[in-house]
Length: 587
Image (cartoon, rainbow, N blue to C red):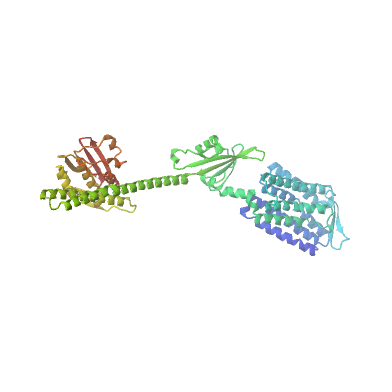
């Protein structure tokens, strides 16, 4: 082959290189289908530019005609690829199989007639070397099919422009929108240049600048993609966004057949491959309660009711109609949203809210006790002390002992109240841990009864401890002392003169320790018994001798027993007495 590159032939290598670069760049996976179309368009443009450069650089007729034929391996495809790319960019679906086939009929005929142009005059009425020019040029006189091919190419360009302008008007874009300007310029430029060439309105004869124009068009497309982020509004991006959505999404056609699903849906329904074409009622892996949702749900979010076996999952369901620009329903977009994390978060928030409300209630109660009961107790001690001081010279021994007894009772009452407050505060701390040890039960209860000797003697109450010396209890000594001290305090406080208190213990069949504290006092009203530990403040009533009561003791007992993983029960008959039963695990 006789080839010698001149200035124009070498210049055409520039759009060849640019087109090849863009073709390779647009093969990246993130550009998807539109990127593949753009890449094919740039490959075709690069082939056109390269073969035209070789045609211009040929130095004999045979070589020139050889490269002229090879040019048309790409030229008929360029307008079709440009049209399909614009359709993608404006959001139109690809043509169906029959229409897609018809798009390539004229380009196929053009290729066949152009390759065989030396045997007929359908495509070129005349093809020869122009001897009048200063450089080697092929002079071509178009035949009738050349006009068909040109009209078809321009018609596809006009149809692409129509789609572009219609979408522009539908979206109410500004005329200064850079994406719009880039798209329209990229589409119009090559056809404008081809029109000028076709009607011989260019200064250089027998030189086709269309390859330059299509390369420039590709550059403008690239500018729109990289500089103006065209892919943010084209179907490529929508496809990417569809597959990147974390919630399952399914696309159905007008007959409820599956045509697409994102990656989240494939994982959610455990599909190895997309069951394309299956109707909604026969899609594998789809639970019946989800199928039912499509028949009953509207366009808004609907909470699904899974079966009991899957009740831990909270799902929201939505089916939106997919409509054409004319309002015709083409299918549905079905979306599922796992609402379980949000529901669990709401439950945690509600739990924390309840906990904080309870903490505030306990705080208010603590301040109330400190402000009223503890202050009153210390005020009573101060009053007794001042009375004793004022009359210390005129008080005989019997009165002095009576004052001391009153003062000691007030001190012990204040001391027990302080102990309860401190114990309650320790139990509220999240980091507090019980110190479990093996303890002699009878010894603990005997010591506690002795601490109430004055109150017991004042009411002449008889006490009985029916517990073997060898019986042991496992628990925190300090907290168990708080528990039994409060039970004994209540038994004394609400007992009458000459009453009795009985304490017994036994081991149950399940190796649990059962301790009962029984008194013969005024009892507890039946309507209080069931709510005694849910609302312990109702027990805040004075004792039979007017003893003060905060209502805190039983609440503290309940918390101590719970901390030991035990149970507390109560049986009571008004005017006959009360029994508190404590059951503690011992293993």
